[in-house]
Image 1 (tube, rainbow, N blue to C red):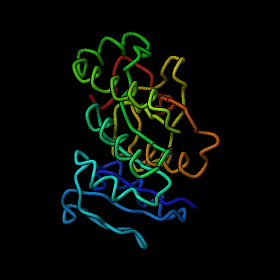
Image 2: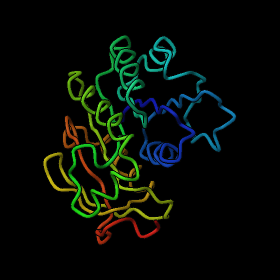
Image 3: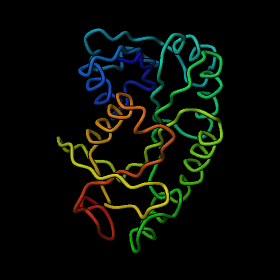
Image 4: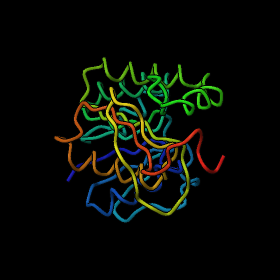
Length: 206
């Protein structure tokens, strides 16, 4: 089993991921700015107060761990890598966004660009920074997120056309847990994540 630092542990994907990782037997450190924001701390996990943008705090939290999980962007990615270098941690599982490689089918591509086009540059920069850092990384690009209580997803690779328009946060957390538990399968990968059968011009809930 691995020792995992969960950054932004009060986030909506991170909450699912922390529970699943703990259930799978991994040892967790939950890094949050405000520990009171945590709805629950899984059995055996510990919550640590800290700021991702302060490398000294992040490096201290990551010391002695095997994996960092983060759902962050651009500048945070640089700080995370700096902190991981200080702590000697090489494995990173990182959430970005669909659409950063213009990998979506039309007309979904045009709709997605109109909705979040300005943010895509930041997410793309984060992915580029990670891919060139020499880390043992897994980058996950989920579709539009839902709170559905389900695990149902299909994976596409970086050079493949994206499938689906939406996916549950619980599904993303399940893939995070798989990536931590099976690093050989997910090492140095950059994957898209969508729910089967949700192709179309936009997510059904929009």
